[in-house]
Length: 327
Image 1 (cartoon, rainbow, N blue to C red):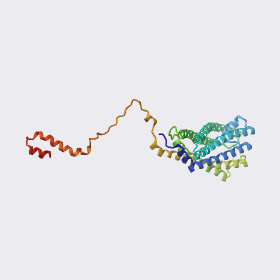
Image 2: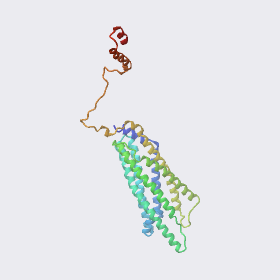
Image 3: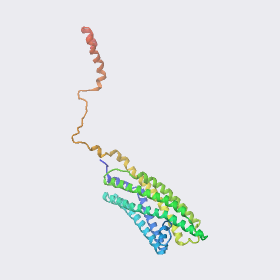
């Protein structure tokens, strides 16, 4: 017996409040990313992470909008797939439909795999964009001009957020594989729970730091004259809202991982390894029991009597003395 009842476990797990908060935070995050992508497409906004790709296309407005649209569409589709998979699993669990639960988990797993590929590509483009920004800064300095050089900030953000994103996605993939095996009744596994919980906490702190930094820029109007525009202001406001939704997402994900780990507290008492039941047909088991006529409760009282009987052989053949000793 590997598990007690996956249907009741799935219904209990997907009914937690943390799962609902996670689903709604994912929905809000998806909508905000979609709005930001549309803003970047129609306004041809320059995104620092993609400056290396813009450099290869000579910074034309058409290619900038096209690149923003491609990345925005792919990211939005991945987020939509994850959100749909999560709500589909929650709805299926409430209806005791275990095949639907597994299908939703698989949709999340495949979407996160695609997201992992996008994160790696974005991290590589961001690191390459650092060289492009430095190139234009040096070129402007040669003509005694000054341009904003945020290459150092971009490098730190690319390395930090890129590492958090990649590690979190790997942990979520492992977690989805473990959940799929558990709800299919194949095996009990908590793979990825520890790493996902830890990285969720780190991501919440990083998102909070980013939200504070963006909020400071908006409040103090920290814009260069050539970069200030309604689109840039809207973009920063969207970034703040995205950071807030990420904070809620990471916290709810950490709570959901904790709830999933707690499901195995009771199941550990009912878990039996399949290897324990792999016995040979010829193997016999010896059942050891005490004989029915053997009662060890009277051994203590019978031992002195046995000793007295042994002494009879050493006593002279006098009946009176023998009877007293035996009695």
